[in-house]
Length: 158
Image 1 (cartoon, rainbow, N blue to C red):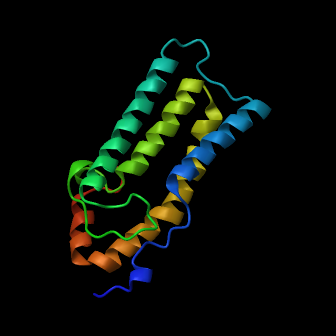
Image 2: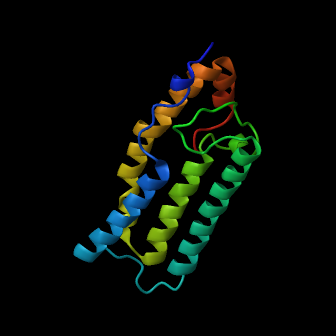
Image 3: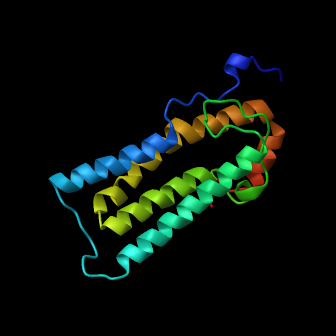
């Protein structure tokens, strides 16, 4: 299938890092207006949150390094020259989004901010509908059976 270079990209209009940063920022603002805290007295909250945050950063970094080695741009609005079946992409079709989810979770836990955690629900819904479904449609059009086999062998998230 020959692709017009102008059309060789997913029809994504939302940048996932900005979506997650916006969700965290909204959670902080909501916390100032209407506090929703949890685990106030737990000495484990901050270390647990930081561990989850670090895991998210590590997963995202691993995915970025893997993409860099294959000369792919992490921006979902740019063309994907090939499928990446290695690195974290052999375990998850969306390791960067899983990493961003862990980062937001870790921030929410560390700060004891329930808003940040609750906002993951609409954030992930928007991510699924506004990014992942569009990326998957693009990759299916571009790579056909190769992408279908990849989807059959690798889960969307974990």
